[in-house]
Image (cartoon, rainbow, N blue to C red; front, side, top):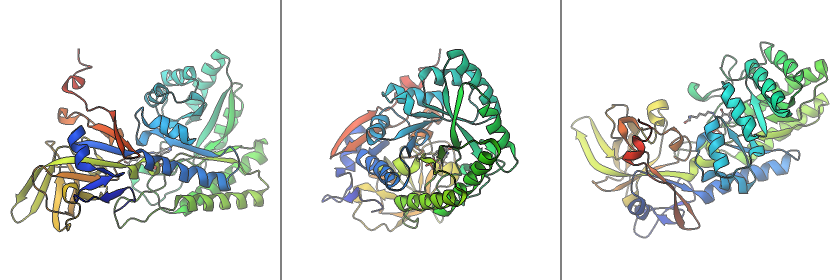
Amino acid sequence: MLYSNLSVNDAGHLAIGGIDALDLAERFGTPLYVLDEDMVRENCRTYLTAIGECLPEGSGALYASKALCFKGIYPVVESEGMGVDAVSPGEIYTARAAGFPAERIYFHGTNKTDDDIRYALNAGVGCFVVDNFNELAVLQSEAAKRGVMQRVLLRVTVGLDPHTLAAINTGRVDSQFGIPIETGQAEGFLFEALAQPNLQVDGFHSHIGSQIFEADSFCDQVDIMLRFAVAMRDKFGYVASVFNLGGGFGVRYVESDDQVDIAGNIHAIAEHLSAGCAAAGYPVPRVLFEPGRSIVANAGTTLYTTGGIKTVEGYRDYVTVDGGMTDNPRYALYKSAYTVLNASHADAEPDFTCTIAGRCCESGDRIAEDISMARPERGDVIAVLVTGAYNYAMSMNYNRIPRPALVMVSGGEARLAVRRQTFDDLIACEL
Ligand code: LLP
């Protein structure tokens, strides 16, 4: 199996964290998101242990809420010692509703409205990651009104092009995120920020993209940030105490993907940074990472019930499922590859080639094309693996399909964390 928490039990069924997937499907219904909390914890520990081994004290990891945001995730990441990256007041609200301490929240967003800024200040978030000049001005004025000194990081664009999908590559010089170094504008951004009496500039942030497999791209990112930081020290006498390197470590979705050595990459990045700092006579800054996908993706599995096989003779066999792009739009958006299993016959040969189709009136409603699995029959439980990140978070109600429930499993026990939407939920905002 792709990950160690998945196995085949004596009944020949898929087991997730030791629990029979068919029992989960029967107890909670399908489609169902299953999140293995123990796996999430293990992923957090991989980051925090490696960071503790090779980076200065005060370095850490912020869980990028956007990957999977619901109340139940916050006590888990909090108890592991992570901070949180929130990209909207809605994410801040959810984290706070779950009791996550505001001072450990970093507030992101490329177009924070005046209301967003006020909301986050009133909530007492620890740090704003300031994206642009407009935000800087409003933040200063709102912080002054409240008589507070607000910690900030400045989001700079390093102008890198890691090998990932264009849609999730955010570090290119012409991206809409942050202020570019290459054009000289980041220098003005820092100058402006340093002049604000109610803002304390802790350092710089950049994020180069997502689903990145090589450490090299992150080392290039460090080089560019350090070169900029050294130039700013020489120019303004400003020394950054924090480099936030964003998220982006890749995750193995299918057998042919590499397994990313996160601890090894963190060590490689740390060595690279220390060597660069030593050469420039620059104090090694505290380093923050913002992992989302690599914390939750491999902890998630989606269970569906199949409506059976639909054969288009001479062309294609479809396996239909009771969910689809509404709970996982990633194939429709990015053609993302997934591993799909017949959980009811997880021990059988995966010798049936098929396309998994959802239930929307939309030909793009597919989860995978031309994959192999054990031939299913109507009623079998189909499992799509590695769906913990950017599935529930990106789910929608197209065709008025209710969002699935989410169950957390830990230590062999399952508990409902998000109940299934009802039809009444679908019309709840309608007057
Ligand atoms: N920090 C910032 C500023 C980000 O923009 C992102 C992701 C992260 C951290 C977390 O990156 P991760 O560790 O998850 O790679 N919907 C797309 C992914 C979009 C990622 C956007 N930013 C997908 O389904 O692949």
